[in-house]
Each structure stands twice: as structure tokens, then as C-alpha cells.
Length: 441
Image 1 (cartoon, one colour):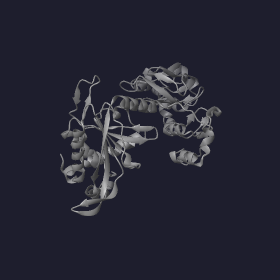
Image 2 (image 1 turned 90 degrees about the horizontal axis):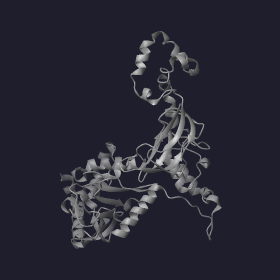
Image 3 (image 1 turned 30 degrees about the vertical axis):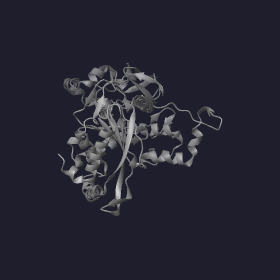
Image 4 (image 1 turned 60 degrees about the vertical axis):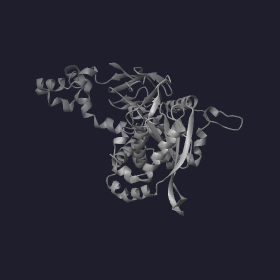
């Protein structure tokens, strides 16, 4: 029988998605739970699994299409010969087996040629067959290798990355397990310069030479819209300062091995997050937001810190909930988990909601000061630069101290310069006296 596989629910408030890639072609045999289409929403991607085994008779979407929830992706001729409800409910299977004990020897022999036994046992046979074949779909779908034009051993994340940097995956030699293509394999092609031949789509040129024109991903378009909204609606001011984190860094280094034994990488970020969260509790205007009408200030009585994470697809800001109630070890553990989820593209839209203040760590890449753009409707954002040793006067002596650059941009409609300076002073106080963070409730 023919069935339609449709776009599933993609989360609250998400009504459409863009088709990044169709992973199967008409005529392909697919198994239940096999990835068939990769979709992208504003902040996340998802591979839609097949809801039924069978043969693809029609592909209704193509790469770049925008599809609403409920739209038909594929039409499949099901091999089960039965509607999906019986396959979902486990009760019919044991019942049928009990009624036909004499036929018990027959099923092991008959699965390869199901057509011969279809008339007498059609309602019973479909359920055991997929179960017996279950191990094969796992091997097929884990690499998402089936694609138009042949088999390419690359997962959705690597396919997306290759598209973004203009690399034809059919020309990439995989170095991973079973020839699987890795990020390093794609970057090797980019660095060699061979990717340039794939750059000028259709031979397009401007007055200076070949160019490559690509449609912006939905995520990049969302980032662009958000940045334009912030830039055009928020009058911002940025304050700059430095924190002496010499003592903090000594504590971090002395504790690093203990954390590593628990599988946690201890950087300075957990300390910064805790310090920000503590300061936000004492400066509610920095933890507030303007309502859409601009007539009321909404003071958040919770502290959720957004952490800007740089990914291949763009900047993503997952939220660390109730950061003021977490200890340094708890923050370090959650931070590692969040970063891994984002970079592996295993996060959901819900992971990106609810932040009241954002931290961007430019120092992880390089640079000192910057003027970060506020993540509206939040009121402020803190950018951390790369810590570096500088000559500092301490008790009339010039000594080398590790200084952390801090840049805080704030919405001047709600936050005055004095309020921002007091917040930054308190933040610096926590960073320069890390024992206060370790003892904080």
C-alpha cells in the first residue's frame, strides 16, 4: 500500500523548515527509522526518519525548498502490506503466535520469499520481518550514506559543512572509519585550493573574476535578521575594562587535574559565568528587558546566562538555566555538555530559549576588545577578550599580571552608564577574588 511521509512537528512556534538535503531517491528501498530528508529551522537541523519500510515511489521536495509542518516529503510503497497501527501495537503479534502453534517451524524458512506465504499469514508475518532485519537499517542509516548520484559516506553535518565551504563531496577522500568523510578531510580540500573549481556555479563572474553565489541558510538569515533588529532598534553604549585574573588562573591550574579525572575540562569560563550570574542578582536592571511596546521594564527574577558558541553554521547561543544557583563544578560540567551538543548539532530550539544575559568569548579565538551586539530582547551582553600578561602597578611596583579584557554593551534606553559601570565593577571584584565564587551559595 502507498503511504505518505510528512514533515513532523519541529517544536513550539516552528511552522516551516528548509530542505537541506534529500537523502534518498525515487526507486530506493528504505527501512523504518532510516534518515530520508534533512531539514533546517531557524536554529537547528533535524534528519526526518522514515515511518515505514518500503520503496520510494515519489520524492515531493527538493534541496532548498521551504516546507510547512505536515507537508508530504515522500510517497512510499510499503512492504509490510499492512497499515501502521497494527505494527505499532504489540498485542496482535503474540496473540497470533499462540493461535498458530503448528505453523511455528514455517516462519524461519519463509521470510526470504514472503510472497509465497502472504495469503495465509499476511497479518502475522509483517511484524516479525522488520524485527529480524533490524540490525541492517542501523548500519545503513548511521552514516546517512544514501544520496542522489551515489553513495557518499558523510553524515548530514559534514554534508552541510561541505556545502557552506563550496566542496564537492564526491571529490573528497574520507579518512574516517570505513572511509567516512570527516571535517578535516573537507578542510584539506579547501586548503589545497581545489575547492575553487567548485566555487563558480554556472560560470558566474563579476568584473574581477569568478564568484560563487549561494543561498543563505535559514540559520544565517535568522542571525542576520536578529542583528539588524538589534542594530536598528537598540541605542547601545559599550564600556571597556580589565580584570586581574592572576589568582583565578592559579586556582584553575591547581584544580585542572582534579576536574580532568572527572572528564571535565576546566577553563576560565565557568568562573566568568558564575561571576556574571552573581553580579546579575545584585544589578537587576542588567538582567531586565523592555517589553515590545517600550512602556515597561520587565525584571527577570531568574538568571539564565546565554553562552555564544561558534559553530560551522554560525553563532548559536544556548542558555545555561539558573546559573546563579550552580556551583563552579556544575557550571563546568553543564558548559561542556552544552558546547558538545551544539557543535554536534544535537541541540533543540528549546536549548536556545530563555537567556537573560549573554556572554561571548572572543578570547577563545583571539582579540581583546570589541563592541558586541546585544541579543535582543536582552539588555546587555559581555564580551571576553584573550587574557594576556601586562605590566600593572601594585603597591607602587610594576609587576606582570594576567589581565582579562572585558567589553559590555548595554541598551541605553534602560541602562545608564553608571549602572553598567557598577555592574562591571562588581563583576571584576568577583573575578579578582575567586574565593568569593567558590564559597558562593
